[in-house]
Image 1 (cartoon, rainbow, N blue to C red):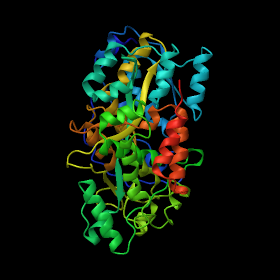
Image 2 (image 1 turned 90 degrees about the vertical axis):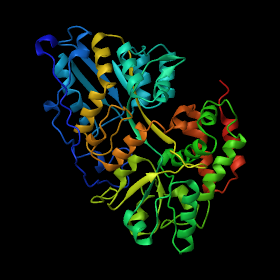
Image 3 (image 1 turned 45 degrees about the vertical axis):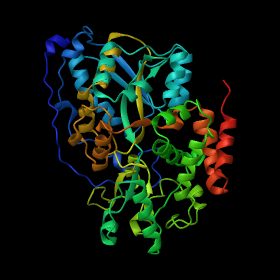
Image 4 (image 1 turned 180 degrees about the vertical axis):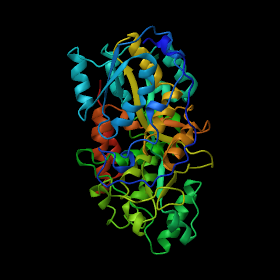
Length: 462
């Protein structure tokens, strides 16, 4: 049966499921995603319909296949697979999904050997740029670009572009600029959610003066130890130096040890290297370097610390039965701005849908993935732990209150968004020298200027 025989179907995206679930997980679920993303979706994808008209212009696609290659594996893969059903029913295309934990390395191998997938979900703009410049990725069709222009902040389009040409639409997203806390502990102590950085520091001083430890932190992550510290630095660079300087720093248009970056890391140090502030329930300052990031926020639950800065995806790391909600066991507030009060910047990450051919079926599926219809369907078939920065996403379709808060931040027209800087830097830096040096900065109390100079000296010359 052709697309035309199937007819046009109107969207039936049920906004506002109104479901608030207790989020479950375990402390070592960095790869698996933990309980927050297991449990399946809240809607049956076969009952969700889309308007088929946007895909008719790609021709009769009945019997075509589109292969998708990603780093998203079981159990997080099933909601993705389910979200393709309305597109498959509309077009007759069979979408074949393959997830791999060796995605980054194997994608390069496959493209070099002539075995590229039709579409890949690429989480690093730097990897996307390398594949574009090697001639593997094709530009996105006009339909995809039109969706991105309408439904995303322009910065997202920039991260999916290479040398001024647009190649890949955003897919999922995560917000990193959060501080986790216990609503009950705050209420019992009479603490208010800080709206500015100064208020957050004043709150930290008040907690410490009362004999408690305000912060807990951990940057341990096996071979990737140090990456949580890069998020701290990036968040503060955005707040002290601003987005333009952030872009210059990430692109190495200013030295890595520029005075503005030194100031930012010293500001981070006022929290992470302050023995009066850390490391609640875990040890001294140096314990931050050896504490696994998945365990680092758990002392909030027994009152050993009051605050923990970590991304929205940390919801997967709370123990089973922990309720994540504004009136639950734990919740999070946006990391406040520094200086004049206003909308805080948002640091985040996400994936981009890159195509390796311009076949009509590939382009049609790429268009679907860039649409608000797909974002809303994906929200309805997913459990907690998934969000998109697509402004056409109905926030109430998201299950988790933290995911809803993330979406609201992404959709705030006043909020400045920037992609995770270490994912934009050369691998030798963003996944190498920066991790190592920030670990030394904490574990061995290395001086700020010294560690930033060492990273600057490690920056590749070509």
